[in-house]
Image (cartoon, rainbow, N blue to C red):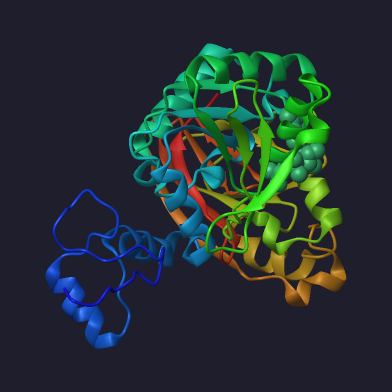
Length: 369
Ligand code: GDP
């Protein structure tokens, strides 16, 4: 190659020799890319390709540069996730960017989950789900960013794993990363004065650098937006209503096949086939749930959305996306998750459907609780 070609995703120099190095692209893909004028390295191509269906935010070039830069460092990566929106807060492809760097997975907002849930079970569940997503965390820890005592423990765990390296804290927006960083600063008191910010090379993204006592830094990176979260379709007021601030009180509904639950006007759950069973809803205590007959559910929604079924409020209905239906066959104890809103646990086998506003993910996962 005489002339340097750069990946339009991450800016790395394209090369066709070393599969595991930055900028690798198979020769065939390079030729095709040159024809269309769009050359991506294989990493970015895959990420983009995957993102077209999974997530829009990650097509952002700045974000790819950020992750690429982290991948080139010898550092500990601390990935903060929101346990209440676990699936919505995983960063697709993080394991590819982490490279050989260890990842500490921090499950934040543990205070929202029922206290009866054992911490060991929760971290085990998180580890399994992370493995399914390709991420191999060195350790999984739980935090409630609002509690200072937990920040000290977290710092100790970070210290254990960083072994004289820098620490990069990454996470999607709304997982509580800022609260957590502020908690760390408070717990280590007096550091406020020496925090600096700088930019990731070639991006408009700021990083905040908090000095550690051995000349290394804890670096807070900008939050990444996950557009398939419910948060993007709601106003601030409604967002507050659906985001639990304290321990969730699970609600049990004894349902027969042919019955429907509406989660406000934001989501819908149909019990289509199966024995009578108790379904458990884990959503914000403030969100109203309505039960109705499946056969009338479409009409019921059309008539009551914005009224009895809120949020959205009446003046928001015209802008609110239509609900999209996803059907699931359930064989074992399963959660049907409405990204960012919560989930419904099904214990017995059956056929169910989940609905969420167009763009918001509905998925099935192994039950958390
Ligand atoms: P960021 O976008 O990741 O920086 O998230 P923020 O720090 O701005 O927090 C997002 C929301 O989650 C705010 O309303 C916080 O008050 C809330 N939050 C953050 N940490 C916790 C926590 O440990 N428990 C609970 N219940 N809420 C939290």
